[in-house]
Amino acid sequence: QVELVESGGGLVQPGGSLRLSCAASVSGNSFRIHTMGWYRQVPGKSRELVAVVSNDGGTNYADFVKGRSTISRDNAQNTVTLQLNILRPEDAAVYYCYAVVMTTYMGQWWGQGTQVTVSS
Picture 1 (tube, rainbow, N blue to C red):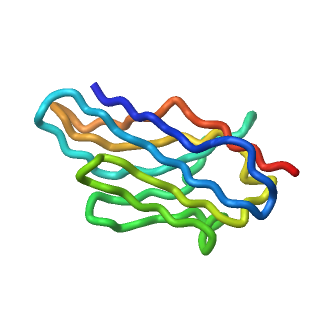
Picture 2 (cartoon, rainbow, N blue to C red):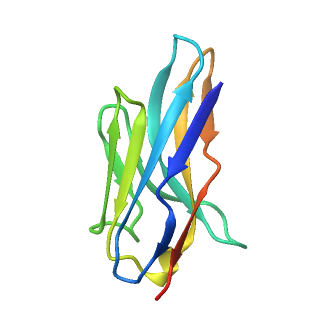
């Protein structure tokens, strides 16, 4: 019903930048995408919020990315983008796209995840 497709992960050197993008596809004609954003997870730890953006543009960032990241969305295209700068080794994780979508019900949806590796 809702599919989130991520792109942009990969290997980045410490201090480098990357851009993660996610496109939402929703079946049916009656839906509304509320919050979109990104979480990340490393083995053995819980998934944690990186940044989210509401459909009116309000944003929320985790403390560990504040000042070095920007999240944005295109409501016409149903996409969300995360620009992450000054990458650190501890930023290495699987990054998951997230969306709250109202169709016949309000549901939370996740992408398949994209690996980000930070290494020289």
